[in-house]
Image (cartoon, rainbow, N blue to C red; front, side, top):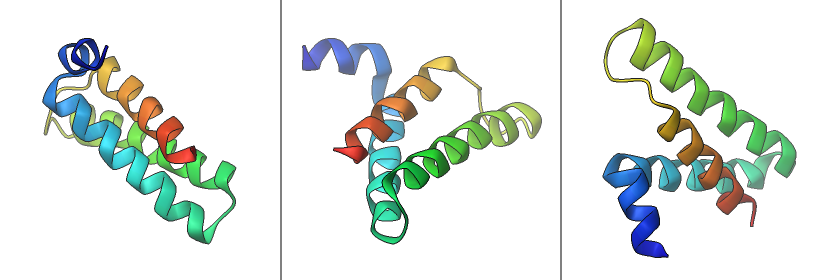
Length: 77
């Protein structure tokens, strides 16, 4: 199962999962968990929309957004 997840998301997706989980858990120390999760979601969405799409610094992908959601869920645990 882990191999399927790695194959689906790839190395970039795993970085999205890791960063979102870390961001959610660290922000959870300073804010309510729902606020930390929401802020991590906003940061992930802005990265995809502003950095990747508008500025052209990367490729906006739904997979990355779903990886962010998976990382946020992991960070909430």
